[in-house]
Image (tube, rainbow, N blue to C red):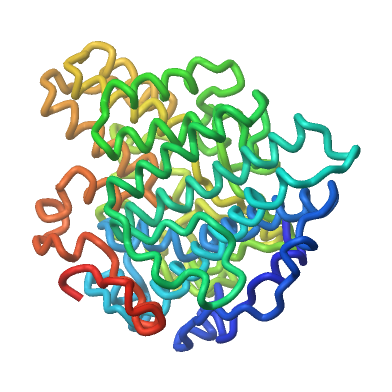
Length: 451
């Protein structure tokens, strides 16, 4: 998925945090390195296609390490096994505005927004017989979907953020935009998803957006906004599509050649475009660094036949110095280095619909959706009978189902349960800090309270 076109638009000026943590003490500052004239960047079918792939590449960059870490490490399933302060801050829910991972994630995400903005701005003006209208609409739909995904992630991480909707070609372009509210940010996500759904084709592609991809993200958006009827409607549209089904057994959704029928959207890697996330999970005896370790409570849940069922496959064990050591096994392709980044899965759509139906008082239907996920994992039906019991059961199911994905922290924040479950009672800490460098560069950008 690596393409050169967007390396011409933006480049990192400082060293980045690498997957092997060799440069974790450097701060990132995005600086335009070279610029293409506005009328030259996207001019024909080839450059339009390359620019769209470049937008996926930018999203891939923040989903490779930083976003999953920000989703699972502040929760209670995983601990950081090291001394690097920027990771310890995340693990201990004590972030600072100069945290390297926060800075890099924010930078990468706005680079992804800019890549999508360039496609949205440039593709409509392309007049090339090799780019038919249907394909032009598809490329635009993909760009709108990707921008929606990034703004959604920015919103759930930072709250309201600057809504940059046009290409940024100089340092000055993005200044003075100011922060929108979270409601306005989510409104923009909805507008982009609505446009994407109109433009995208139906299809079975799982590593590029189609109509169902936009609908799945929209179901998640409505869940976060507590718009229960809409969340149920859009999750149902995805679940009802014959292109998707829950993978059985559980582990097959993350087994090569990937792109299983459970996958609604994942980001693809290859040996030449590597995902080395496995390196952070594997013990040193297996060539890894063991930076992220499942905590004993999570290991017990996953290994409990009545709770984890076949999801125990997310764990593996090796012997080190005569003792069994358990490690996370979601990312396991150490030789091929082609584990995908998982963004949208059908199991989530079932649990979104289950939660929405529980909130709407449709308890039998909500129980059926929850049990569909449990049954796939070889776990018996839920014993929950009341709405409150069912909502807690869904929360616990999500903890196990998405144990090492970018999910747990954001779930507990959106439901207001981060204080009760994690002890993070200061709600100002439920949002990430805006990077210090960006505050210095743009006086109109405001910090989140508490930082």
